[in-house]
Amino acid sequence: MRKHPDEYLTGNLTAMIDVVFQLIIFFVCTVSLQDTVIDARIRLAMAPSGRPVEKKDPREVYVDVAPNGDIRVLRTPLSRSELAQMLKKMVLDNRGAPIPVIIRGDEGTRHKAIQQVMDACAYAGIWKIKFAALKERGS
Image 1: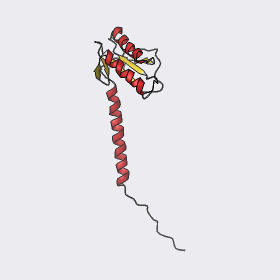
Image 2 (image 1 turned 60 degrees about the horizontal axis):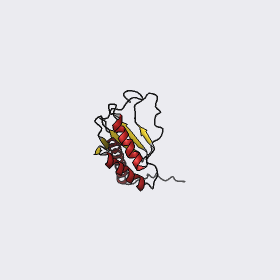
Image 3 (image 1 turned 45 degrees about the vertical axis):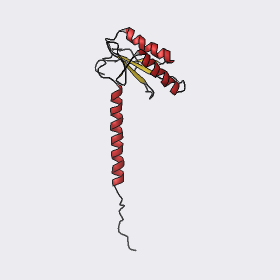
Image 4 (image 1 turned 60 degrees about the vertical axis):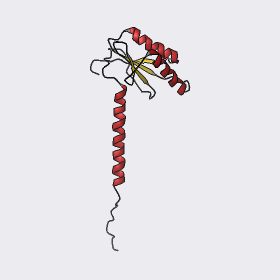
């Protein structure tokens, strides 16, 4: 009996390389979009006894409050009424389901500015509010 020479599978690698490059581009864009959500200029207060976040909700809205009381969402400045209208529209678009809001107040922000954000959430019918803080410095 005669053996056949080993047959090698051949194929066009161009399609596979194209898919790999598309995946790389997707992940690079996704990572850079996440960075635009958080304003690095906000210095969060310390909360050593706070619980860490266990799982994230993709619908979370991050509201940054600067020390001077400026309110920003996705680095876009908003007034209190604009924030309330935006949150109200999000609740309506989500068929009344609660939208989780995370308030990122600077450690130098006065409580009055944080209260205005909480009032805007209450106007929109949002009661699920979290406050971002650091467990330890540098994290």
